[in-house]
Each structure stands twice: as C-alpha cells, then as structure tokens.
Image: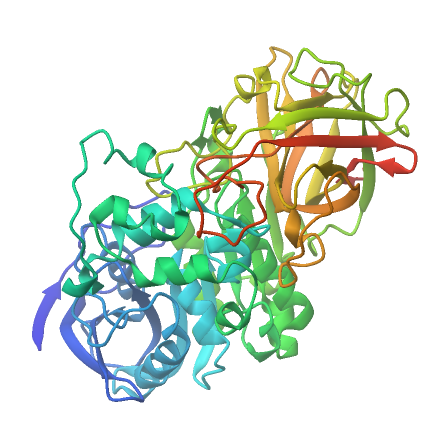
Length: 584
C-alpha cells in the first residue's frame, strides 16, 4: 500500500462551490475481495484526520490513474467523504476477465459492503459517476446491498438493450463500434482471436469501416481481432434473456434508496436519465426511494454545457454536476437539512425560452398530450415539398412515397450521439438532409404565440414497405424564422419490432401498419415566428446501422435491397406526432 498526502489540490472551482475544509490522503492499490475470490483494486481518497466518514463508491473501466480521473475523488474527499475509486473486474489493476456490464451488479454490491466495514467508514455508502460509471451504480443498487444509502447515476443507461446498445430495435453502430471495438477491448483480446489481413489506410478510416458488411464480422475490419462482447451484442438483436439479466428497468422495485438522475436531451442515454427517474418514482422499493428520487435534465449531450451542437443556450443552461451531487449526498449520507426535501423533484430546462423550471413529476401534471397530424398533396419529399403539420385531421392526398437505398442512406447530422464517434452530436441544422428526396418533411404554420412542450414524445406512424423489414426514423424540428432547422427530439423503430422489442416479426409487403415510435422526450418552447416540423425517413447512418430491408438476421449477410416506402395520412390511417403540451 502506498500512502500519499494531498493538500488542497486544484479542483476547477466554481462560484457556487463550497469552501474546501479537508486536507486529504490517498491509499493506493487497495485490494477489495469479491465473493468469488477475485480481487479488485481501488485507490481510497479520504480526509487526513482520524474519524469515520460517509463513503462514495466509484467504479470505472477507464482506469483510476487516467488523466483527469482524480478530480471527483479529490473534490468529495475535501468535502468530508471517503471515496473508493475502483477499477472494475478485468480492467487495469483489477483481476478477472472483463465482459462489459455482466459482473457489475454483484461486484458493485460487494464493494459497497466492503466499504461499509472499513475503519474509516461510518457505514453509510452512496455511489457516484457517469456513463458506464453510472450504469454500474444502477446494477449494484438493484442487488439491494444493505449499506447503500443513495445513488447518483449521471448520463447513464437503465437498460443496456433499450437505451445503450440498441434503441427502437436498431443497433447503435457508430457508438457501439467506437466504444465496444475501437476504444475498449484491446486488454481483453486473446492471440487466438487475431487474424491476418491487409488493409489500405483509406479502408482503415473509421467512417469507412462503419460501412463494413456483414456487420457480425465487422470487428475484423478495425483490428483484425474478434471482439467477443461486440459479437454477442449483434447475436442478441432482440430483448431476450441475455439483456434481461442486466436490465434495471425490470428491477426498480429492488432498489430501496433514493436515486438522482442527471442528463441531457441530446445525450445518447437520455432515455436512461428519464426512465430512471420515472421508474424509481413509480416502482422504487421503499417509500423513501420513491419520494427521494430526483431528475435534472438540460439541453446537453454527454455532460452539462452552455453550448452544444450549433446552439448556445445561454449561461443559464450550465449546471455544476459536482455541486448537485454534493447537495444530494449531504442530505442522504450526512443528514444535513439543506432544503432538498422541500423542492420539486424534477428540474428541467426549457429550450427556446432558455430557462429552468421545476415540477413535481415527469410528465408534468398540467400536460395535455396533443396530436399534430401529417398531411400533404402527395409530394412531401424535401423541405420544398407540400408536407403539412397541424392539429386538424388530415385532408388532401392519402399518402407520400420515397425509396430507401441502404447503399445511399441518410447521413447522421447531430442528434443523440456521443463519445468520439465520427458523427456530430446535438442540435445541428437539418436543412442539408431535408434536400433529399428520401426525407419527407411536414411543416406547420408560423406560430403567433408560444407553444411549450415538456415530456415524452411519440410518433404514431401509419406506413408500409414492400419488403419484410425496414426502419422508420422520425425527428421533431424547431424551424427558426431564418430557416435554421433545430432537432428537438428523435426516434427510430426497426419495423420487425412493431409488436414489442422482444417479439420480432416480419412484415407483410405493402401492408399498412401503425408503428409506435418512442422519441424519448424534450423540453422546448416554440416561439412566435417559429414553426413545428416533422421529418420522416428510413436511415440515420452511421449512428444506427443500415437496415438492409431483407428481413435477414442482424449481422449475418452483406445483401441489401432498396425499399419502396409509403406513409399514410388519412382519417382511418392518421399519422401523427403526440406532443406533451404544457398548459399555462
């Protein structure tokens, strides 16, 4: 064990930051035994003075010694917490084999109980961290470790199938490949999984590798190596027992402590941020867990910011994550009456007006879910077409059509993405995509008064395709007076999953179905002079893999076909977006 004393190391202070009160110490390379005998290693940050302190457990696959990793442990130790900062199983200093997500529940629970027994611990433990570090918190909390008092999973998934690896049944290609193949696996590859191949520099470019088919062996195009977990993800393309074993959304009732979620409308894990709060409020395992859970969501991507994509949401948009965490931990681990219990549990940013509001729940109690219908004269293709959006039932032509060619997909331009992928994330002007004839554009009248929505967004799309499967992609757009088309929410549905993500079923060619498309949620005021718009298409590449339109199992074939798509908007087939309008 190596001992290091740290005095007031820099922690990037903010104006609202509490005064630092503790000189701290760090005990490095501390062994934490798991129930199966594997040892996971951690660095323990804590106040230098003698005493027993509340504990935060932070578990990471990215290395406890990486640049910048020390900031959070130092911050919380300086404010009177002991912090157990641990490499997860099979990563960096820790023993065992790493298989993403699979051991994080039991390992997290064992670490929490170990931390509670230490001589510097007062027995009260919470968890901290974002992204993968947030997902491990959910998995550990679902094990109901007795010493856990609270959890704060930021920008995190609650179901690895529903809102990480897949969304709407479509494979999140650029993120899964970038995170699962390019960034994370090399420490776990075995020589027998290496293959010989020759690639040109052009072929090795990330944006070119993502075109590789079959998808099930595309890992070889990056490193000539088979990445087991990546192939497992592709092999389990529906919500089956492989995914249920690591989903928290079916186990909220096992979580007995308050949970605070924190995330952004444009984050890749926005659904996890929202579902985590609503799941705990409705199904948490104790009254304290249900009442004490909270949500902060802003106009961000994978972390709080003022500017994101091509938008500046003003300085009001930024929220200091550490300060929010500290207040939550102080209430639940130190018992400080800091007013948190007397505030509304939901704190959300309203874009457009660029202001924060609080609410007692999500959706807000004064929400009026309102249908906005698609209609056209039969030529809604491109922004220069005749597609219309409004609250009146659809008149005019009964349908619009376009062709979707997987060899020429609609490219990703912003949206809910993150983390080093070759595509931009966030609110980017959608007009370049709206010049394409395989994008249907439905635009409302110029608004004469503000229209505020805050809550879940869904699309009820009546559509048909001429093959056994395809994708439907929908975006909600805020059209500014200068024409800037800002995406506010988006969703995708792989058509074979129309009856449920655990029940894939081929389509009958050219048969009309109603598809229910989850567009997660948002908070925005469409200002006077702006217009609402809905874009409909069949690809969002490379954020999502290209549906080949063949109905074949994911990842096994390189064959693709062009699909002929039909969108209906008639009184008996009313395609509509359902918006959570907030009553004044």
